Length: 152
Image 1 (cartoon, rainbow, N blue to C red):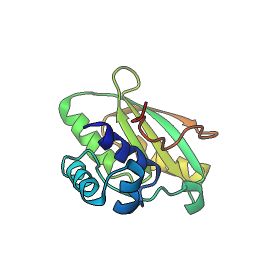
Image 2: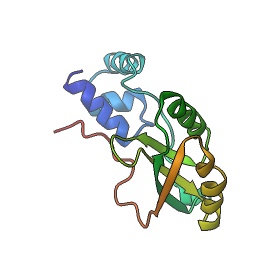
Image 3: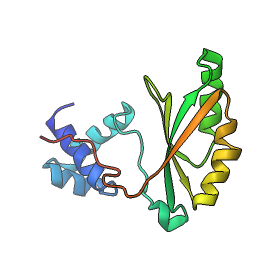
């Protein structure tokens, strides 16, 4: 990965719908070498996909909640069962396993407080091995979907 590859990635993070011609112009390459570099980064899973960023509130998810999960048991089978079940909960936007306490941090979307209460009580609290859920409502996003800091 050289400085040109990093420039390509920085441009795509800012505007993922660039054509190869536009991208090549921005990074000062001709289209063919730019296209080769792009395809190689896709093949090597440096670029893992392309997607639209959608405002959750615009599609009915006006409430975002950070949920700290403390596990009752942490044996391998329970962890696998928990993570498998968690991956199926469609309102979980992000889920991360942590060192220390809590064991997991989730970012959950809901239409409103009543909707979150149902998700919490009927789904999250029933997942394998869960001892405690601690919920914190997000008041305001300060930084969201920031591109990786690839340029100096």
